Amino acid sequence: MKKMTMIAVDLGAGSGRTMAGCYDGSRLELAETHRFPNEPVMVNGSLYWDILRLYHEIKQGILKTAGMGYKADSIGIDTWGVDYGLLDVNGDLLGNPYHYRDNRTDGMIEAAFDRCSKKQMYERAGLQFMKFNTLYQLMAAKKQQPHILDKAETLLFIPDLLRYFLTGIKSTEYTIASTSQLLDVQTGDWDRDMMEKMGIPSHIFTEIIDACTRVGPIREDVLKELNIPSMEAIAVAGHDTASAVAAVPASGEDYAYISSGTWSLMGIESGEPLINDTTFSLSFSNEGGVIRNKRVLKNIMGLWIIQECRRYWQREGQALSFDEMDRQAEESTPFQCFIDPNDDSFFTPGDMPRKVQAYCERTGQKVPGSQGEIIRCVLESLALKYRMVAEELEHVRGRRLNTIHVVGGGCKNRILNRLTADCSGKAVLAGPVEATAIGNIICQLIARGEVKDLNEARSLIRESFPLDVYEPKNTETWDEAYHRFRKLTQQEEDQI
Image (cartoon, rainbow, N blue to C red):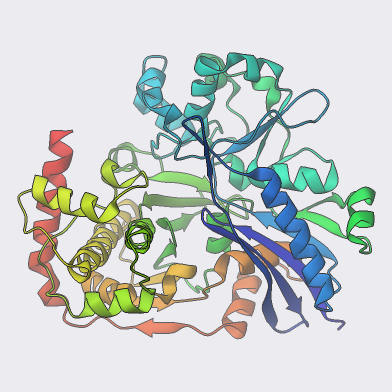
């Protein structure tokens, strides 16, 4: 068959890229065509995304893809969840979208509980309570900037907004909508009753469409500006984690996945939402998947802590590579101290090494002094957190999980993969690194009828991309550390 080419636009919290995906009927190949930073902008004490710059970079990616000889037939966009832009009656943007790490949502979860019980909110949305969820952002907007919300005619999440810029078509893709805490987890449609309870205008929300939907052609003025032939926009799994999970090269059912990057999203796939007293008490989310299945998962702070440590040390004049940081961690004594990666103190940017030390001081542990000790503390703590969540997933699922699939950029961290295998006692299969872009491309292939379904797609991924396998070793040495970690995190929760 004729080789097909598609463009995947994959935007993460720190960087973005365009990838050309080429499919010849039996194998899939990827090539990066453009990479760019995605840096938030602080203005008057508020943190924003530079959305027009991101749109410009997407167009540059299309240009560079064409310049490298690829003739792309379609394009799909995936990004992080929860954040959104507002359009007025003319379809014009009402200001830059806020960054989910902005502090405007402080206190909004508590305000929501005054209007609806925590248990009822969980039963309806099935989501982990995170202060950046769209629900709380809109409550903050209603309280702090009602004049902006009053002018809004349409709300679009970030991938839908960027697709609208390219096509002029307004729609909301299902997986990205599922991150909002405003979607009814049972019906898969907007929970307008909850919107009314929270004082959020329901008319601004658009029709929900499924992933793998052909949306429409790129606007003529955009084609003319870029001097390219016609191209089709496809609604892929707009939430980057949903795209990454679609690319998990799994067979069978007894596995967990970790979409590893700035965040670690760890979970299982389920045909139905898992909402009960256990999932409520353990704070599991039920987010949408490519085939309207559920990604039962938990958000873990992930490599954000390592990235912020490196950023701080670089500002101090120490140009550390990730390889050098790994070497220092390897040379440090194991099991000296631990942190709970999800502690609120690690959520915001700043002097992250000091935050790690302060946590250890507060909890009466040995305080890590060197860079290597700090890095080792964080990596071991992530592995311990993964083991804890894996056990919780087994309890929720009612059966053992034999394998952990690690996908995304974080699967390149060989130390963390090895620690995770040893700590959990489970085989860790790492790869593909470009899982999010691959999932994006897979959605385009399904939409165009070139791949039948997700099972066929995953078989294609296994044929096309290699995996690194980490078998568990020295598992008994982790048991005492795990006991300490569980006791430490439980004490921290009891104090909240």
